[in-house]
Length: 411
Image 1 (cartoon, rainbow, N blue to C red):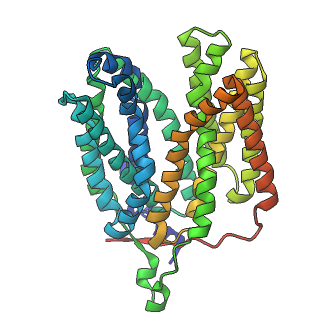
Image 2 (tube, rainbow, N blue to C red):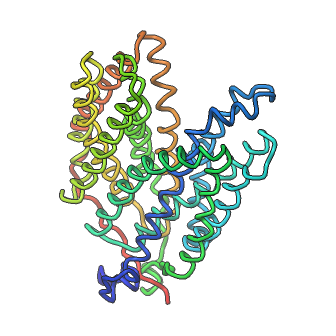
Image 3 (cartoon, rainbow, N blue to C red):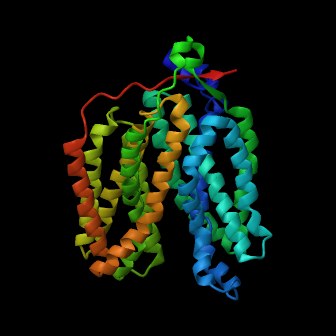
C-alpha cells in the first residue's frame, strides 16, 4: 500500500482548504484539552481555598483540584491504550471528549469540595483517553516526515495553549472562581465535529493475505526503555515552566509582569525548538544525546548564576532543547509500534510523560531540602541530564529502525 494511503481521505484528495485540514485541526485541539485541565484554574486556587476554608484539610485538598487530573492521567493512560486498541480510536475519542465536558463543568453546580475532587479525577480519566487517542490517530493517519511534523505541531500547540489558558483562566476568574470551569464545555463542540470529520483508521494488513496479519508480541522491552527515558525527559521539560518564577524570586525579582514576560519567552523558545524539529532528519534516536546535552547546558547556566540575564539565557537554551526533545521521544516511541499495538504503546508513553510532569516539582523540592537552594537543585538536575547525554551517546545502538506499518482508512 502506498504511503499516501496512510493519510485521511481529505489529505489524500489533495484538499488544502479548511475541510482538508479539519482532521489535524481537531486532533491538535483535542491534544490541548489535557493542558487546559492542568493550568486553567491555577489563577483561582486562592479563591477556591477561601470558599472552602471551613472544610477540614482544605489547605491540602484544594491544590489537588489542580494536580489530580495529571496524576489520574499518568496512572490510567496505559489502560486507555488497551481500550484504544480494543474499542477503536475514533469511538473512544468522541466518547471521552463528551465526558470531558460533563466532568469538567461539574464544579459549576457542585457544593462539596470532596465531590469536586471526584469530578477532577474523572476529568483525568477522560484526559487519559483523549491524549492517547489523539496521539495514536496521528500515528495512524500520517507517515514519515508528515507524521513527525504533526507530532512537533502537537508539542507547539501544547506549549502555546498553556500560556493562553493560564491568561484566560485568570480573566474568567475575575467573575468568580466557578467561571473558568465553563471553558470545559468546549468538549461538547469538539465531540460531534470529531465524530463527523475523523476517518476510522484500519491497518493495511487487513487488505493483505492472512499470514501478514499474524500478531507479534507487544514490544515490552523496547517500550520500557523509551518510557523510562520519557519520565526523565518530562521532568526536564517541565522544570522551567514550573520553577522559573521561584528562581526569579530568589534573585529578588518581584514584578509579576517581568515573571510573565520571561515565562512567555521560555514558552516561545519551546515552540522554536519544535519548529526546528520539523527541519531535521529522521534519526530521532541518534539525536537524543545532543538534545539532552543542550538541555543540560541550560540547567547548568541557570543553577550556577546569580544574574537575571544569565538565568533567562539559560532558560531559553534549555527550552529550545526541550522543544526538540519531546517530539523526538514521541516519534521514537511510535516508530517501534505496529498498528495493532499503537494504542497500548501510546498509552504507556503518555503515562510516562505525565508521571514525569507530576514527579518534577516533588523531586526538585526534595533536592532543594537537601542542598539548601532551588538553584542548587537545578544545577544537580543539569549534571544528571549531562550524565544522561553521555550514557545515551555510549549506549544508543546504531542499528536502523524497523519501518513503521502503514495504515489505510475505512470507508
